[in-house]
Length: 212
Image 1: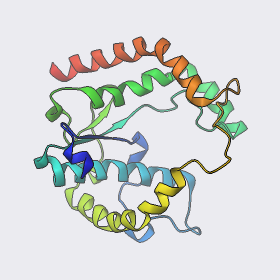
Image 2: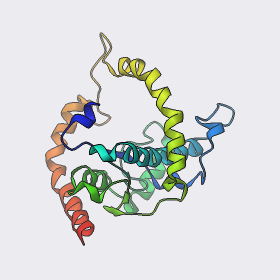
Image 3: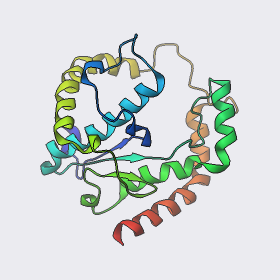
Image 4: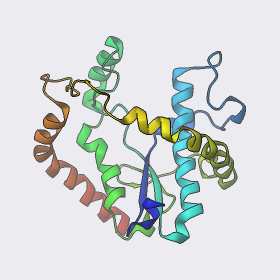
């Protein structure tokens, strides 16, 4: 309700090209059971659900002014993803010359957060700062509706526990950034100014392509 009460409500779901696997959403294994769990299977399932939820948000609340879309930021974007795995860190370092920087990876999300008119984005899936194709399953409004009806009651029953988990616990130390050991909030703030220009360039290029 608070989101819908804002002037121009907008939801941008960060999905991935990994939504292509699985090809169909298995509601009998949602969420994955421990015995059937696989890392990439669960990841692909989650990213497919991201697109479907954006589609259903648009279908349900678009008439009330909300705009919802989803994005693929890029494959192997240079971030701290996998920082706890030595193998993953090595693999990402190896492919980093051929992948996007963190700024480039953020550009499509930023574009979808600020682009006007918002109607250009409605229920869309975006990659490289432009509209992209997603799988037939990710465009199926019946699957999107069924997912919503499955997930929404769970969100209601867990929202208070989730809110509690997000609160800083008494006596907890401030989050430290993985580089330099300084408070994460300060480190990120110091980097923002240097990164803004690169992100703006990516976003402006994307806006031009959407209006073309």
